[in-house]
Image (spheres, one colour):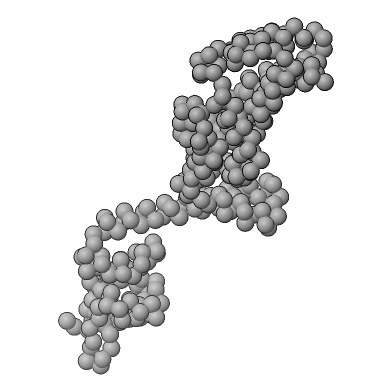
Length: 307
């Protein structure tokens, strides 16, 4: 082939926008083959130019040299390489979006450097790792108890699912949730709730009892009855009688104290917060907590009666 049909290493560099050093690097590794002219200088044909253009494009996409070599040697197809690296780019994009959301959350909260590290470490966990944190919390709080299997199954199915492009408030909610489920005091509180639930009558009877309490207390609230006022006494007596019948107990001061403890154990506001955080993370619509005002009234009435 005549020299005027070949390119020098400088020509190749100018045509591809690469440096002479880079072209020589690829040539030395056999990715861009050269021939020598009579003076011993490297010369490249149009095939070498095409290979160099492909190498540059693949390297711009962060394809490693060994994968580039496999493609050029036809040990891998362009479609296979494109699919693998598209997945890799997707992962990088997700990581960048998450990093952006963490930084926006830090900007909103005015976080200190220590909190930034904690937020970043927690937020970057994989979906499997996030699931494991919640599953471990459920195992610790419900393990070994005869808890309602349907409720436990619902707990396990409601996992935190950070989207690929989370909003700052979703990152903040996940960080708060991760802290909450690893808090030993909260775990102990939920464990007490689970133990109480395990000692309750069957689910159908307990559901009926709860409906009766909600109806009776809401009627008192609509009527404007203060739970600490004497007018609340007949309502409280009716509620306690319903519980005593359901549990086969007798209405005594000791039973009222026991019932107060049960109500307080089941009314930890952090339990509601757990579901609120899950809703934020997963993009669920917020659901009103209609039970909290009912049992708050009941608890205040019991406390006033026992004082």
